[in-house]
Picture 1 (tube, helix red, strand yellow):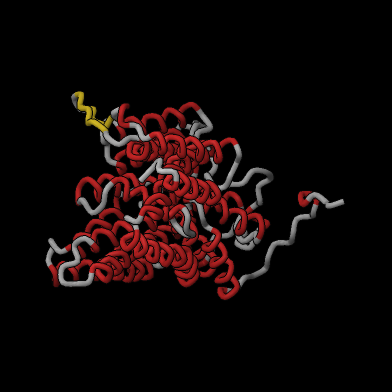
Picture 2: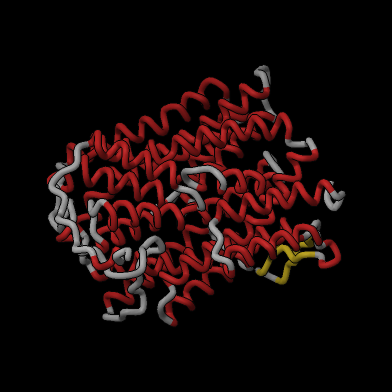
Length: 465
């Protein structure tokens, strides 16, 4: 008879891990990181907390809540944070870069295939199937994040308010996130427990105590940098991020497509709070409606690529940069311009992530156990649920309906679907994907591959073209 793994005695606290040993673990995490931030954080939790016992439950959640506060992709930033905790700056670079590389290579290859063969019937049908499943995947993210963050009436009310403000009133993401943080901080200071919750990557069952892990409970020495070290860190990473942007502006001017990509994604890196799904909502509004680099349906195609490849979901931004430069190549080959645009978008998206971690993590580590800070971070996580729900509604409008109409009632403005424009094939695939994920407990990759094959089948019988 096979013994229950839960009956096995806890393993001893690991004594040490070299950066070389950590490299292979971070590579394994990167290659297994499918399904968006919720799934990626769950993979990290399983490997780093439960399997390796490098970091404990509370320390993991403290780092996660800080990364949820930052603009940009929280899963990649969490990997960078833990890598920094273990092996200083080199460890953070190894963890953060490895988390990005597999997805970056995959998205670049798929971008080439998309522009060369995307109008071919079978390829178009594959992406049609992927788009229909994306809606169910994002709804799953709402449920998974919400199940961890919305454990009280005030938290649920805050999430609902965030959705209303962003969808109906167009309130900017930073304002919503800042407001949520203030509410959570004030609430915790007043003694309320309304915003005490776990991160959306935590596993069920007994928590791994910090004291039983490699990092333990102690504050590492490199979490006490001098002001000179802090200044040097800021100058290095600001230079790596902004010098290429300044060079493009000086050489090509502000109207060149590469300058616009550099400025747009650099701006995005500073204002898109609330994690990868919140980033996508911002990009969908600006890159689609503002710059016209791609259509809503192409944005969904890019998200389908990111969902079916390892690494951060935010790698879809590489696809956006690729199409923007591909369609405004100037004197370059369109494929070369697209490739350079993709690499530039990736660079200015992720370089700031290292800046936020290497500058902020030492101070956040010193705030572990601070009730007010914990309340602020948990309230922000609750507000993110509303932001992600907004993204799900945006996807639904552009996946299930062929046309929408703008509604304006005073300060309330939103797009409403034209019911007669519903796409039956997309509706059937989306409902099938939701059934697979929520009722049959199918994995994200299984669901996406299934709807892609269903798209091929519908194309074969002439249901879609």
